[in-house]
Image (cartoon, rainbow, N blue to C red; front, top):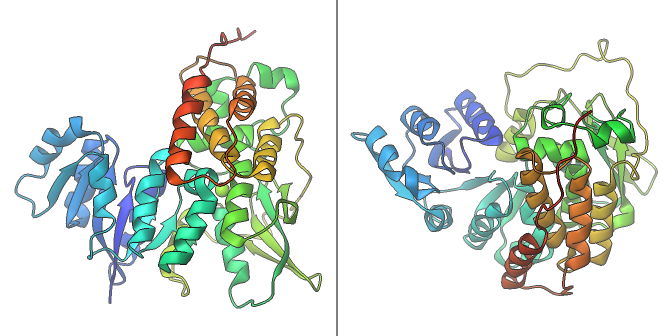
Length: 387
Ligand code: MG
């Protein structure tokens, strides 16, 4: 039986790579639904090629054009974010790849969990903002989450066949483009520099988050919920070669690591094929060509976003939701040249300080926290002049 797949965010970086994995295994997977935010042209081309049952354009302004481009195709065309929430629950869907960017991924992911679908989770904000709630819903509905992010996939792969508890995990971080930058260089960092990631090819938001190490902070929070860990069981290690994707240490002192080339199609494929593996046409790791694997502790004074993520995780409740909201506003402002790179951490800290703490938030509390923090963390600082 083929697995029928819904991809939320099919025109993004994860979405297009997921389609490449699916195209390599037409005997195992078929595309049931594709959704995109506003890239009508690419969504239409993907739909013509993969022949899903339905497509959704979340930004309704693109509906007419999409309908025209798919005229004569046996494909249902829908528009609007509520349609995204609905298509994940259709009986024809077995697996939902949740790869929307930002808090927009939260509601459809919850719907997929409630419909007891297997969720291949790439959207970080779902677990960062509302990890406690998601964990309860997954338990209640007997749904399954398979992680797509390379670090969590590595942990997940290291746990295959284990029945003993985790002592601790090591999440590896490339360190991003500013690993060796001075405080002064960080102050003057431009959007173009921040977008130049040394190892991974990803969307703009997550690339900026990697440059600030907020991304690693989010991954710490996600790991806490995915693997039921305490903050002190999660250690971040800077590993610029991006060969070891993460590690698990057990009570006997043994450490398991998952290694490979930095290619997102590997964790995407595992999230779809688990517990099996499928052959993949990707580059193989050459140990002889990467003889030096180095590891060091991150500099949390330089990368304050990472420290703020730990702080939010220790606070619990809606604190991480506030950090996420402030960060989304800050990254958007940085990408639009409104603030400097170091202002991102300042805005995140401000968001955390202005948060009204709620210890046991409901979904409505999370959404309200998100709305409120967005409203109070406006990018008022002037962009610093580059020298
Ligand atoms: Mg990652």
